[in-house]
Amino acid sequence: MEVVSILLRNPFHHSLPFSIPVHFANGTYQVVGFDGSSTVDEFLQRLNQETGMRKSSHSGFALFTDDPSGRDLEHCLQGSVKVCDAISKWEQALKELHSGKSEGGTRVLKLMYKNRLYFRSQVKGETERERLLLAFQTSGEIVAGRFPVNKELALEMAALMAQVEYGDLERPVPPGPGGTPPSKAQHHLQQVMDRFYPRRYRHGAPSEQLRHLADQLTTKWAALQGCSSPECIRIFLTVARKWPFFGAKLFAAQPVQLSSKESTLVWIAVNEDGVSILDHTTMQMRVTYPYSSLMTFGGCRDDFMLVIRTIPDQSSGKGHSEKLIFRMAVPEVVLSLPEA
Image 1 (tube, rainbow, N blue to C red):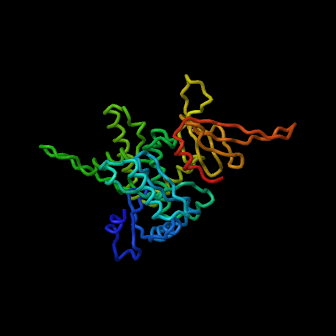
Image 2: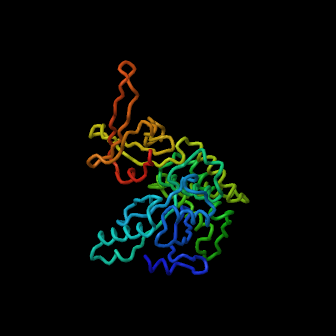
Image 3: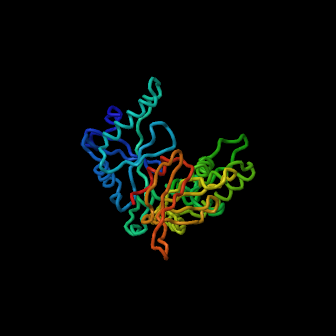
């Protein structure tokens, strides 16, 4: 990692001995310099200054690493940790996982800057860069099925993101007598469908239906001609923020209390106010537990457990605790629940 870092460093841009790229939700990255004593907080201070973002306690953004095993799992770095220590531990884990295998030496740590917890009270101070990244991250949640949109709204949101990413729709040139390769517009249209339209609405759909979707998307995208990127981002976020759980982090889980014959899933939504349980299909709230009632959380054998303090009984005045147990990927929630 040290060699790679030095190779990536531009001596005219960075006075510190090391530098490493930090990746954003919109596919761009920023190379940030650091030294052997730099903490994550100090690293983020430089990153925020260079990208026009507020400090993390206001923006809710945090620094994440990918998982050395290659699993779809991200690790949030605490502010007091030294960047070099985090890199060293990641590389050591990679060596242990790939002991004696060549692929272990070809991967390097990937740093990502993403919104970890959304604060409604801090919306007024958002910078343009924060809004851009928040929109791209929300779009990713829509594509992955972790944000409630119907097919019509999904097309509207995809068209807005297309206008942000590519600008005005380029009208395709009719093919000549001998036929021509796909135009740039057709290529962009396919990329928009892949990047910004929910996978669940495309999966298994017949080709005729997909062509119809592409035509509808083309119409909506063309209607945005002349609309600037900041304006499209503003419209996108205005619509997205109407959902009460905008900015929450969702994790699929199965309540263990259900009988073995049932496979009903729910969403555990970690948000600014507490932990909510949502219906997996409609994403409507079933119940919310404020952080003040959350006694503890963590692994319970192979499951995930929340211990909730219930309202004291009026007659006895005594409170009770309730254990909620879920089957799920435990490390994801343990890493993502904020400190109460």
